[in-house]
Image 1 (cartoon, rainbow, N blue to C red):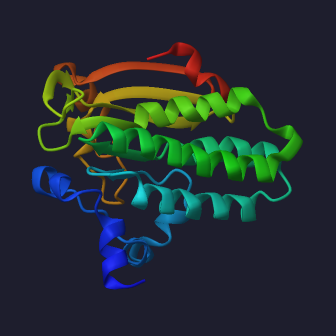
Image 2: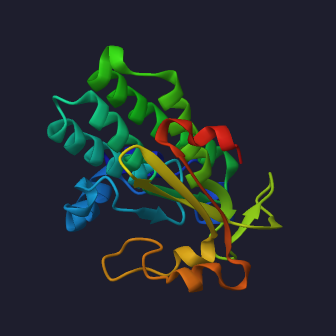
Amino acid sequence: MSATKQESSQIKSKERVSLHGEVFTAEREVNAMLDLVASECLRPDSRFLEPACGDGNFLSAILKRKLTELRRKYKKSPHDYEKMAIVAIGSLYGVDIMNDNVIACRERLFGIWDAEYTCHCKGETSDETREAARFIISRNIINGNALTLMCVDSVGKDTKAPIVFSEWTLIGGTQMQRSDYTMTDLLLYSEEGTLFAALTEEQKEEGGVFLRRYITHYKKVQEYGE
């Protein structure tokens, strides 16, 4: 790719660069950076947060790596692949101040996930599982300001609503626990780099930071709505 072509693929407009500092990371650089944490990119439950996710260059590359590993590991078990593919999509988080980027990122991630799911599970796929994946993506990719930790309106201005993410944890084989926390908690990392793990239960629920929790089948997470 020539320098001119590469530059054009990394920006949408000079105005967006000027107003928001928006420059997309090229695929070569994305993969070089992910290679530094290659083993984590293979674990379905290893969580990643991209605070300026754009349309998903990093998150889509991580998802592809996770799903490729799942396909290798569960090539003879569509059921286990389906379950762990839900875990994988639930491990990816992103924030972007531009609403069109958020929409594009969500669609991009779902497109990658659904193509792999359909290819591997074939006749054993279900629309219910697809809706669960879409719902998780809608919760994990947020239109917000990662500097102020607040959601933004249609023109990118801060609202009074804090950014809230959901922690998705597979328990008991097929049950998925959703726990909602403000983004403040996401800034506390464990030594392994996973989100949430550094907090004790008391810390999580202190000061109104913990918001809600429920447990349901991994295919039915969307039934509880927002």
